[in-house]
Length: 341
Image 1 (cartoon, rainbow, N blue to C red):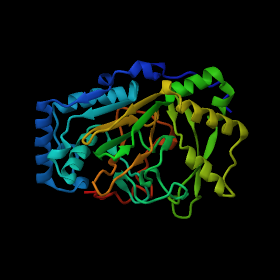
Image 2 (cartoon, rainbow, N blue to C red):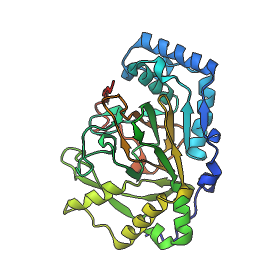
Image 3 (cartoon, rainbow, N blue to C red):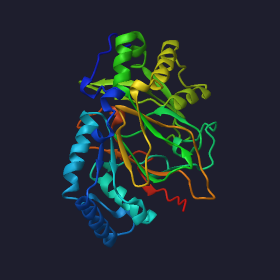
């Protein structure tokens, strides 16, 4: 066990009062940037209407990229989250706005597959899947609140296509501050989560492989903190008789984290508007959403598109956060193509 976990990356350790002004973490595209994005869309569509055939060179953003570099630096070495606003959703078809999102995302990182289907551009909307289903994934579950968690890449992006009738607020919590406060207040609990914890593969394991895997919640790599926390997956792992059992101290530590994520001082709430793009550092920021209600008769259905991105800015990672092109998820890249229109 890690005997004495350290306080890490204090420059990334914000509390809600530190980021109370949304202008500090929101970049609103100006008229010239929107013209450049529109021109890049036209350039990309002349190349192909399939995002899988579009690379960063096919979506040229010479001016916008200067701001994206600053956003990326803030994601990796700063507050760990950003909101890009101003692209007029009503101007574009779903395919066009997805292409814009894909093109902007390509300038922040390389898309990773998000599931066993190889989806590199995924849908986050109510797909009629119950959270009680141990094989369900968060992007398929609708209506209910979803707990704070992290995903499987360096950066996670969400594009808002449509809002729900009510609710569905996107929320983020500072995992760095939570880690450091846990080290300060209960170092023995923090140390427990430096030990590997069991996670459920949700029926997406490699052929012939175990239906569970292990990974620490907290990892120190050099002077950086890496966090992987998906509480429902950890709990679901216990359905497998051969999976490691959750130790008492680890269970106590996770209950403490769950409580901390609900404390307002660690949270920022974002009411994403159609056209908004949220990006977060998956290792420093946990994300969640509030419960919501759709109204399909009026078309008020919460629908977001998701990107998982590998960034070149983060030069070194623990081995289990390295992307493997030979992964069974990475062998067939595809796009989830749900339309709620």
